Length: 98
Ligand SMILES: [Cu+2]
Image 1 (cartoon, rainbow, N blue to C red):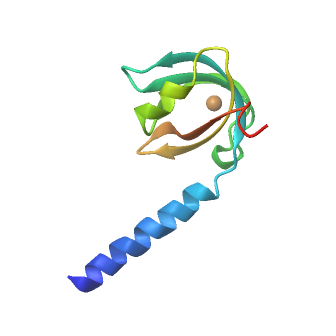
Image 2: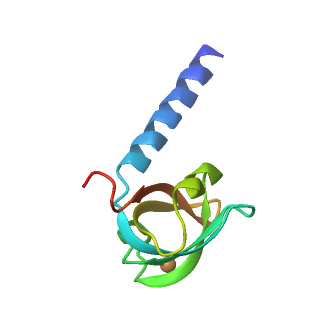
Image 3: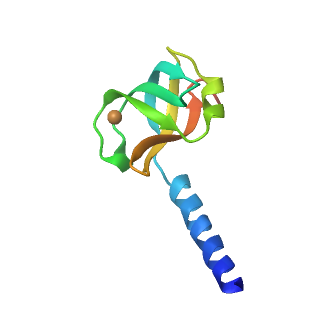
């Protein structure tokens, strides 16, 4: 059981590092659907997903991410494919830190 716990901890740690290493992508918010936990983004190239610029709908990992954005906002975000769905993991408004 202890060995199992260590294995899980190692897996969680590597997953956290994987997300930390995701490149950020610029985007403009087109639509926010808090009830569904979805956001429509006009995004630049997403290098880790090998995806060219386009407008598309993403799931968000945490609906609270949607509280800080609205249509028309410029953002930086990270996304990954989770359980087959393109999912936004982090959102930073472009004005943040400037
Ligand atoms: Cu896309």
